[in-house]
Image (cartoon, rainbow, N blue to C red; front, top):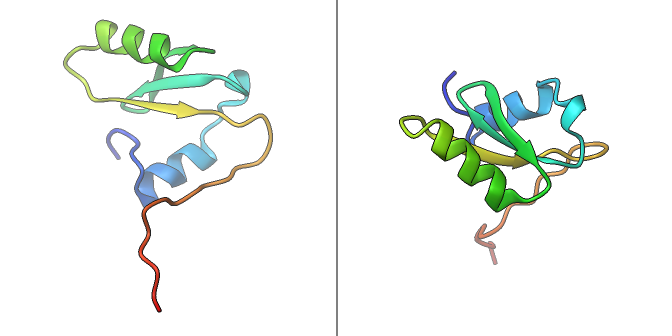
Length: 78
């Protein structure tokens, strides 16, 4: 698998990865590696893209407990 994204595979990776050392923080991922972390998502993303300009960087918020996914923009059936 390549970079985790908001796909079934990306969510599966995020849900099963050991990110316990990053609880409550934002993490920037390049491939399957955490390349930056912190409290401010803008700073984390900027640091990661500066350090890895040729890679796709994905930003995630690691929950303190559990795992919850919100899906926005889904169409409703009437």
